[in-house]
Length: 106
Length: 418
Image 1 (cartoon, rainbow over the protein chains, first blue to last red):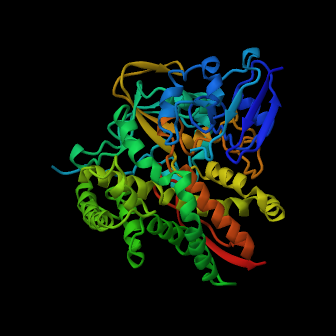
Image 2 (image 1 turned 90 degrees about the horizontal axis):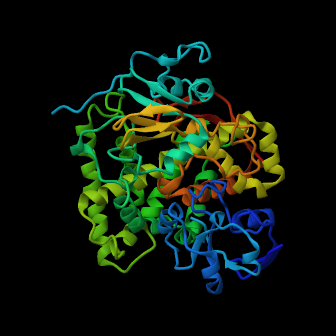
């Protein structure tokens, strides 16, 4: 079971056991981590599950996909390590992943 | 050239049985059933029997209606197939009366323009305005008559959204009704009362531009402030915006932030009266306000649809759509689709996945002001609960004549003190 750490904007850390095959968004919702809205339910079309990937993990998590990129691009807080968490699938490879949550979802 | 005047005298579906009417006679764009509040069975019929429906004969021309949640998601994810140009309403307005607004643009221009202005209604800026908005909410609520019947739309919904717009723009407060007037003009159907032609509307909106240009120059000459005009006047990406683009963005902010929120304020009171057990849940647990706000926005669906235009021949739900065809995505129907939303015909302020509705649209055109709208409704309901046991509806609401803006002109209420 991969262990994932989500850090709220105020610094509160949530270390949770994720399930392979779930998305990172679903993982956060299941564990009631505040700060992820996921208004569209994981369809990559609302941009409200925005997270910042810890730099050390960027290579393993990978780049935004073709549908994700335009949604991220419209976010004023978009950074080089921005991703939509509904588009990241949990696997053993991501055991230890650290992500930070923005202050607001847009 | 005379602008087209749309008359909706015939073909009203009011009083017809949605389940036996021939499908080809269903014309959802006709405002009659919306004003009469009889639209829901027609949406349900189409979702079930013809979810991608072609209306060949309508006073506004032929168009498709898409009524299922997932089909709308598919369309919103494909702006390269389903264009927002030339406009997002059913009627094609002559180009000379069309303002440049990013809501009616495709990428890449849409993305560039939206990015220049979206910061102004972003949550981090809203934080600065919440205190002032709360003060104005309090003033309005404290001035309401106790124990007598009054029109909630005029005294609260309209007044509050107008004041909030004035606050956001730091608009001269005594002249704030101009904002509501311009908003109404921008969405008015010529011939339906307010204006007789698009030409007339456009002339009035030019006055709006002149007024705002003056404010712009004043703000540009001063240090940057928190209001939207100052942000636009000082913003790197916006300070050299051409006048018509400025007007287009203003009208978008005014209309987007005006009747939508106004009608959700009214619709929320109506819904809580129709579902007294939900009102009780709210009184028992005010922490439900944010969830209730999302449910109110789903329930009201302030804009019934958005239009797209097919860019190429394509297929949707097994139907062949030709390049140039108009397609209406009925959010008002998607929000009642039980394939996605559990018990959609019930108003439930604590439902699961309450934020998963299509009132804001979705994809790259998703409502830019969604956080502002939610904040306004949240602050309003926080203050209402502090003061009143109930905002009691004591008469029938009067709905407006539009299939696009779902709204009200009247809601008679009486306040019951705590």
